[in-house]
Length: 133
Image 1 (cartoon, helix red, strand yellow):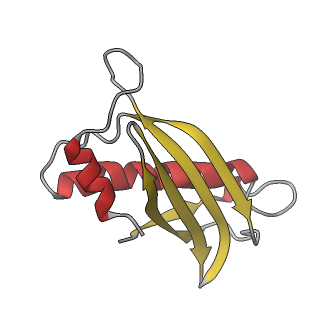
Image 2 (cartoon, one colour; image 1 turned 135 degrees about the horizontal axis):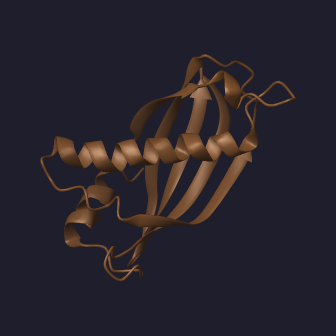
Image 3 (cartoon, helix red, strand yellow; image 1 turned 120 degrees about the horizontal axis):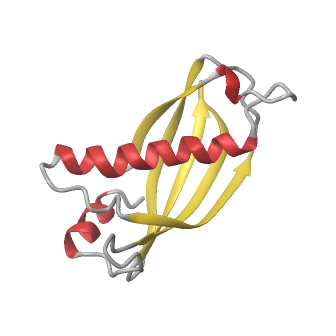
């Protein structure tokens, strides 16, 4: 299952070249990731622990620029793979059926107490498997 989210393209996301600045794509992915990890858990009336993670790697393939601010883009997010303490997410950013970018991030679960990586829990693994493509 893919998670769908919409992100608002602010006018100040547009850079001097007249398109969305490259760094903003990671911001859109971050916002969608938080919405997914927090609210999808909350909908299930479960404590959202999967938000206790850090980004270990991020890649962006820019396909077609976003030229318009003051509008929404669609983000589709899904889980590509799950490891012991990490998982990989894929995001597709599009508008009006046009794909603008694909993002890939590797997330590592962390302990808020020790600030070190920790194994994913069984509940987290179940949650992640629901969103595997």
